[in-house]
Length: 493
Ligand code: NAD
Ligand code: 6OD
Image (cartoon, rainbow, N blue to C red; front, side, top):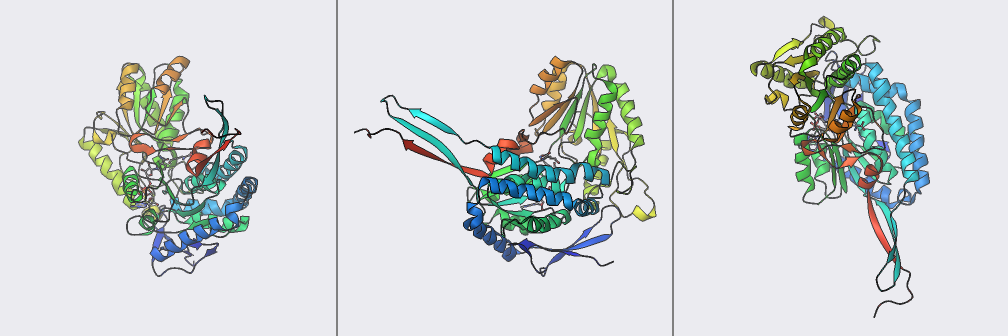
């Protein structure tokens, strides 16, 4: 089989492969699936230049309705190329095809449709100003694009997270330079072709492949002509990018890591809660920023919930992505598995007991080179143990009992992160009360990862800066200019 070379896409064309390439392997079995052309500084400069030229050309004058129509065409092309995107995403990540079909690729199209609707319906600020001396004015704000926006995204939900940012950025009239993770270059490359098919003007969507430090990521974030940076990834990387953006005082929007808590109260519906916890701990092999890694369970039902979870974990089926029975894929890479296994070792040292999992599964000789790890639950860990405080980003959670609502709230909020929480209770008042006291960007009650794309999304503390979603995205990706028109016949003396 010929191994393809994935290329950078600049100014409406895939450019010849660079001198430097890196290898992309399939985490299911370690096989080589692509060579990837790594963008050097000149390539990144060319992408920025292409973005700037697009803004100065007809793209800069395109009407809102035309941009909304363009977003809908992109969504239609995503639907038409659904299977290509699915194949790209599944072979890069090893995630179950059913998951990629229902979540990753479906959400990519939904992101473009949602922001087409939102930009078409957006309203602008306007005020009739009445001064004490009787003069009047009309103040209204126009929204202009930020300019050339760097979109830097991780590997866990590659296309979903990329389009979550590209769709509103284009809706607002920006040009984008997208840098997918070095671990997941494929779906972004298919998307570049889709942009061309949908008639996106040259230079509006550019794609550069590469790594972070001393590579495409850093070349982008330190570039003086980048007008804004939107980033999803680790908290430590966010901090580095913030420093890179500081000299040019560029706006940043950060969606970062999480150490999310679930709070299970004794009045919760047990079956529904167990199903919900399984989703929130193990979806995408625990590699979703919103995944639960800390479960606080009211002591009266602790044993019932623990045994229910163990029984369900034993039903998970690790396996090949395209098999319908597969529930769980590998981690993204052997390097990431080392990190997760290091946390497993530390959990043991810190007094934890793996009541299920805790090691590497035997997947047979064909999959032995893959990044497989057992879905794992810990008991016996103290809330203060480092593994209960740092993001692991794997199929793992620690289970800890609590006695009172106040204690549960305080444990959940005792973290440097602040992304998501889920509350499991049948008491309506408690649901509202506890969710409202979670110091997070999003708190779910009796569900997890149920999304409305118009609602604010993001985190506090180490989990991020700013919000995207709905009007929050439209605000980040545009700059208002306020215009003040005097309605009075005379100016004051
Ligand atoms: P990462 O921070 O290592 O990499 C993310 C992206 O940043 C990649 O494209 C990478 O190449 C690039 N990058 C790395 N260093 C850089 C630098 N110095 N300058 C510029 N770019 C740089 O994150 P990851 O390992 O790919 O993703 C997993 C992390 O992402 C987890 O912490 C997870 O919680 C977080 N995440 C957060 C959200 C959210 O919405 N809050 C969503 C998904 C993932
Ligand atoms: O649903 C979304 O819009 C979103 N940004 C999800 C992030 C998931 C993190 O892995």
